[in-house]
Length: 443
Image 1 (cartoon, rainbow, N blue to C red):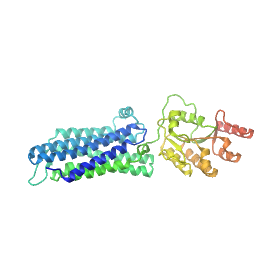
Image 2 (tube, rainbow, N blue to C red):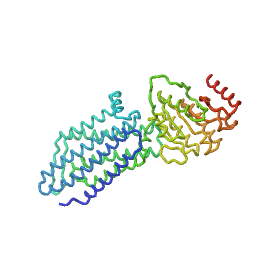
Image 3 (tube, rainbow, N blue to C red):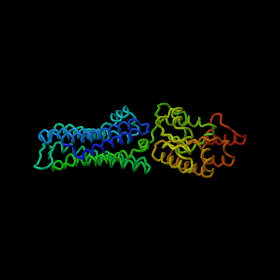
Image 4 (cartoon, helix red, strand yellow):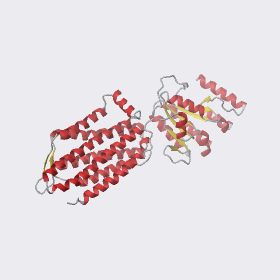
């Protein structure tokens, strides 16, 4: 007996979308490898569930004509295999959601430490329900019959209906609750929020469709599995579409401290202020910035240097780094014009972070691609937001790049830090800097 066309189409659709989804997840350019691996493995389990279901359904068509009893027994086994894959998928996608909502979870070790320190928690209950449903699935004994001229009718025991229904319900509640709470907390930009909604729709839609196709309809002797494969794979395709961008997982991460060293920081700067660091190269600014972010501050670095170079040179692994560039097209870049691009990035970061510190390296570059009044207005706005959010803004500036008038306007808004070997173009300038430093220290 040849497999029906619909089932062959289901198998082809499953194979195509499997490749699409796995490639979409594998190409994610996120430094948070734990989230990526958890997401990849969860999608792999989901695909395994659907593909195995397709293959088993096609295989079971062969003995059905000659040995209906054996076919029914095999059908029950196939449903148990399918259900196990589904529930394992639910566990791994729950782990991904937890790691996404808790940015401190960036490794398997951190994941285990979080579960141990926060025990008991919602995820432990979530996993317990899924494991309970897997046990009930294999212990229970469904009853399968074939009504005259109809499709197989499967009656599931009350024990599994309860535990399985509870397991599906926890997915429908846990996944949206965690992801929606998270994107609202971090004020995710519209495109990221839209993609998160697609992930939720894909996961929850698959859960509902699977429960309907594998539990509800078989009870009424309605065989919708072949069509259900296509519907379910289409819903999974929403997940693939949502993570199509290389930086989707990175966009779901909140600010976090680089480290929390027990030693006292070398630079104890009062918060709520903007500091202009007078230096030819931003080395001293990066030194202050690294000292703060390794002592518990959540940092954002906007720099003219390529992010990989900054990471290697200053050992910044967790701190988000934006490349201030007019021509680069990576997702971690921000264009210098208009200045509002920089303002939006900084304001968003300090609005969601705690003990935030921002390093804005490229003041002269901003002036070159805009004009001084607009960049000065940017500094005004950032200074006010830093004050409101009790944050710190570090701006390295080479004083020789500014005219006397421009420097006078800048210093009215900021505190001055004179770096070692800072350039001093004139005696007048040196006197002004000295007075500004004494005033800052007095405050």
